[in-house]
Image 1: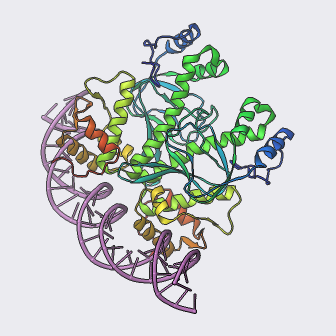
Image 2: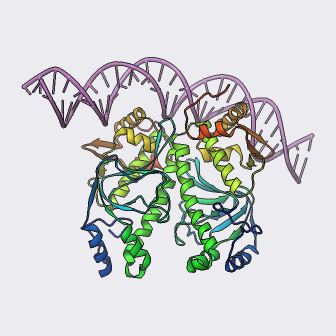
Amino acid sequence: VGASNLLIPGLYPPGLTHHETELLDISYSRILTADPGHEFAALGTVLNRPKLVVSGWVGMSRLLDDGRRQLVDLQIAGELTALGVRPDSRAQVTYACLTQVRYVEFAHILEKVAAQPELYPDLTKKIRAAEEGQFIRLIDQTVRVGRLLAHERMAHLALDLYRRHDRAGFCMAQSFPMPLTQEVIGDVLGMSTVHVNRTLQQLRRDGLLKTAGGRWQIINMEEMQALASGTRQRHNGL
Amino acid sequence: VGASNLLIPGLYPPGLTHHETELLDISYSRILTADPGHEFAALGTVLNRPKLVVSGWVGMSRLLDDGRRQLVDLQIAGELTALGVRPDSRAQVTYACLTQVRYVEFAHILEKVAAQPELYPDLTKKIRAAEEGQFIRLIDQTVRVGRLLAHERMAHLALDLYRRHDRAGFCMAQSFPMPLTQEVIGDVLGMSTVHVNRTLQQLRRDGLLKTAGGRWQIINMEEMQALASGTRQRHNGL
DNA sequence: CGCACATTTGACGAGAATCAACTGCAGTGG
DNA sequence: CCACTGCAGTTGATTCTCGTCAAATGTGCG
């Protein structure tokens, strides 16, 4: 699982140096818990306490004057949250737990690795991948809400989440956990709750997606990818 | 003008160290030109040749399978383009000139400053601000296309571009240059060319914006800000 | 059971895309 | 000099996507 951006406590990838396992052991010995709604970082505060998500979902959101909300990015297990470009960056969004979240503080690891990258080759790579992942996800999110239709947005998001859960080892039988309410999904995709509901129904009806037991299962991967990539096939299937 | 993210050739801010002016003089001695359509970096290529835009506009775009296009970010004078999170990052989008662009290569400066930040205190700050600016603009763009209505998006973009041009000293009488066609603006805001046209007419009719001579002038700053921040006042004015 | 909350449904209207045509304007060449 | 061309901007008619409002149904839980 040397793929991209995960370093889950207890499940270290092979090939770590002595320094790395030692550093991880220290930080991971203290796994904390936060309830839904808890803010890891408020708008405008300094992002000097980044965290690694162990389980649960964190959302980066911005609120408009009249109450509309846009979720700009999500962080799931194995991803870093409340992470600024620099340790002294200020939050441009609110980092809040969308579910119960288990996490570990990551600032100490970040400092140690930045100070002596040569001692932590694997960690250095993972951290860079995490930083780059943040950037990539923002670009994807912009394209998603900017140019895709409702069912295409949903497909795009489903695939994105599937791949990220897959890397973290949370997938089984083409399915991944989905604890978000349709209202929150609407805030991610920039659409109303009602339309989220109808769009999901369409994907189910067309045999692309199954939703049950707090999980989403992708039934037809090819069709899903076609939708997400913007092949304009509107009323596909029946 | 020690504000945020500009370092235009010939117009250095005061307070630079000897090393800084020397380094800038070398790089800025060679100002290059690229025509509209020229790609600074193609999708998937390594972003090892970042550039400082001296004049003109660069767009970061992604293309969908059926031809739809989303511009994810713009770079104008005083901003860095084709800049990855890391020197070895690969481009997730296409970096292409939207107008004729004058620019200077920036990789050499980036290396020098990263190697000995203490010699280049001001440049270090500017570069960090530029990296952070990229991140902030992506978040803003996501909110813009995700949750704002057409005229709100337009107002939000106008204000964003106004502020950025202001920092670079390109503003006069509340106005800034706007060389983009309505088609390109549509690709930025995620809307059709026709609707861009109608939305602009509405803003002009409502006395918020004036467009003439390749410039946009913001007539009513307060109303414009109210629109951009999402105070839901739909059919404002007449 | 009853309460709070999430999901679902229907009816309706607003916002935006699409299609197609027309205008205005600079550059080009006869 | 003026017709011709190409492109950006503009307009109108129509269709489609999606939001809004309101009510109903479902579900977990004290």
